[in-house]
Amino acid sequence: MNNPSSRSCSNMPVNKSQQIPIRLIIVWCALAMAGCKQTGNAPVAGELVGARREMTKDQRMQWWRQARFGMFIHWGVYSAPAGEWKGERVPGIGEWIMQRAKIPVAEYEQLAKQFNPVKFDADEWVRIAKDAGMKYIVITSKHHDGFCLWDSKVTDYDIMDATPFKRDVLKELSKAGKKHGIKLCLYHSIMDWHHPDAQAPFYPNYNDTSRSNPNFARYVENYLKPQVKELITQYGPLGVLWFDGEWIKDWTEPMGKDMYDYVRSLQPDIIINNRVGKGRKGMEGLSKSEEYAGDFGTPEQQIPPTGLPGVDWETCMTMNDTWGYKSYDHNWKSAEDLLHKLADIVSKGGNFLLNVGPTADGLIPEPSVERLRAMGQWMKVNNESIYGTTASPLGRLPWGRCTAKPGKLYLHVFDWPTNGKLTVPNLTSEIKRAYLLADKKASNLAVSRQEDGQVVITVPAEAPDRINTVVVLIIKK
Ligand code: FHN
Image (cartoon, rainbow, N blue to C red; front, side, top):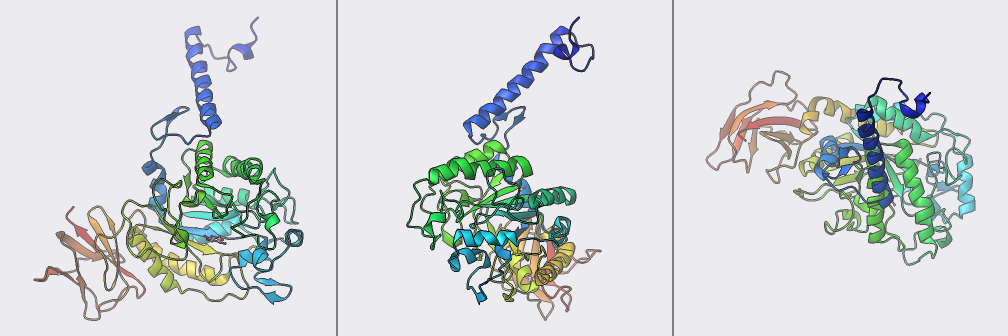
């Protein structure tokens, strides 16, 4: 009597000829996947990976280019001292307090013992991002101080083993993201001030870029890569892996390329920023050339002066002057300024990654929530002029910015014409129709072309939205 399980586990009548092909396909898939994993080589666009064809870069970047707006979250044990050490205010960005206050590893580790964010609510954070009109979240899984916000098997210096909180924050955010349709992305620091094979021995100057650690390769193979694998395989699929801290002496472009391929072999459709390698031109953030590893450029705290046709880039920016929470940093940008920056960035073909620095008890500071709420109100009415748009074809505009879609232009008017005449320079296309995006009836606005070729649109005397009113132009393709 045959043993059913050995022949066909489903007990369905299966004829001999049918059995072989199915098994063969399964074995072949496994081999192909293993081959890919073993080589750690990034799959090539169009290549068959297991049973599916590899995505082109355009296909991989599609959701990201559509999204345009995301939330950056800097959170960790540095949120507890909140910019003060031993009663002294420590200048500079809050997440660098270990370096700025020259705190020895053993002393800094004690912070984990007091990190207990009982007010942390993953759903609440994801909802705040979603209601602001953001489509993805990039959270610091591990920043330069080495503390890990997930249950890592390669260290006890994490939220499960080193804190009284003992909840896997990344697991909860991953779940909430799936529930609310917000893509989870992870920031991960290559530089590590806590690990003995990385920069810990450089104390008191952990960020000493002239020094090298002879055991750094061991850190990469036995710690950095295994943790990256944990993050992708246990909290994925991720949208983006957002590397940082690549400026250290021991990190090289070949290591960056190897890491890029390794990560893509674990999740072929993932997107990886250009800080995986050494291509970044400082805070300007764009890559020196296409040779360098990474899928998009990362300007920091600045916006490129012009559009960059064919280049994927994302400006990351703070709402005040720090990424990690500082209790006394109240230098908040206004919601108006942030909305103008969003339109400016998208009008140049970029994404905007706007930061929040939650408190040690797990709350996003109220001034940040207020500004995100205001941005959300504008996005509710005007998101068509942001999502999936491309850079302006009109160059500089005196009263605002412009974003584009095939056959459509979105004029973002910051300075409303008091005479009710909006003049649009450099627009040669034939205009079919013009209307206010906020006007549900989309009533026609009068359009004329002056002798000097400039287009004039007659608009209401009052701006429907004093921060940014969008006028839509339907143009001949
Ligand atoms: O050193 C970090 C800093 O703490 C912060 O994380 C920013 C965010 O992009 N990146 C580095 C500075 O370039």
